[in-house]
Image (cartoon, rainbow over the protein chains, first blue to last red):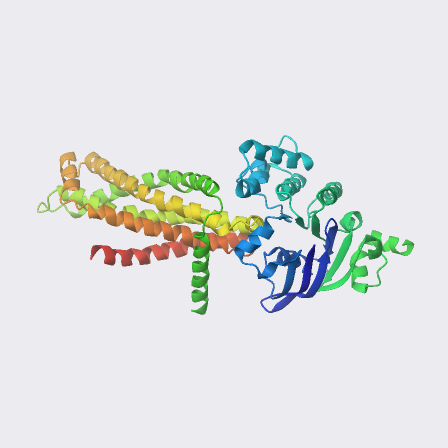
Length: 250
Length: 247
């Protein structure tokens, strides 16, 4: 479980997160939704330690994460996997080396054991016969899947995904969503996904947190999200013309 | 002034992170070997070509400025040797490397920053500053002095070829000149300078790349800043080191 308490973050005096408190439950796909520039990515990066919060607390189980030093954080970070918006695969490494990187860095496994784990992770995300390819030779969807394989290589307890569907066609986006949901259930991971894609919300949103202008405005699940009386949330959810047409039928 | 001091502080904090204990020595070793090739071996060609032609030009210019029969011809070899050892193979070669290696380091690390590859390392619990910069520092601190020695040999050879082929000096006079009043400490002086310059090029360029904020435009700017700041610092430290080591 991840608990965020009264988190505040500003850049050059401009507040980006204002007193955000939220709990992300284990074994569930937790979604942070909101418009572009609402503070979703800053919230995610503040949780994982890539941004230092101005005030507030981030708890991983019973450990106060943002009070830890580099070595203390390292122990928690080894239990995290993260899928970045642009995949963030290492350009100079092949697919196999990218997925094997955390194993090389943090385990003493033999070469054979590492290769076996790498191949298992790649098979799990349906990447076959691409071990020796470089990231520049992969499509957008393949890059995301390789990044997921790298994120799960060390059997993480927490999985963070920043806009996993950005730049993907709807069918590939659904495949990525399904993969994230399956992995979350299979390994009982606490997954936090940052998205503004309504398809993802309806596909995998077991718990949904809506962020608007740095404030947490609403939280609930995918059944509740369509019947909310939060005006800013409804404006966001029913933004496109298809959703507007469907709204009276809900 | 405040901005300069603040940047200086950030630079030293980065260096502290760089020299932290490596997480896994074997991975750092692999990374260092890779940097030997990218930053060291790949610079051999350009250093050899420029040294050869600079040696040739120094010889020809020395010859045309010492046409007076009072000056013995072997001074051409001596002038070529000392110019190459004292200044060219350390300072000028470093300025060339600041352009080639410095921009390469800044753009590589800067691109990793803007494409979130550094964030990916951090989230895994890897000390990204140490993992990315320390192998580059080790590689350049070891390999750049080798490039200096190569530059000295090729530069003097270039001087000999130009002198003999153009007929401004005989082979015997040139070889006598490069042996005449030779002070071995000059080589040590040149190597010490190169080690300091290698540290400046790598650390300043890595600093510029590591703290890039933005997109490809900012990576380009960081790359330019890396070359400019490294070059200015090389020239400044050249004066300081010359005063300290030769006075």
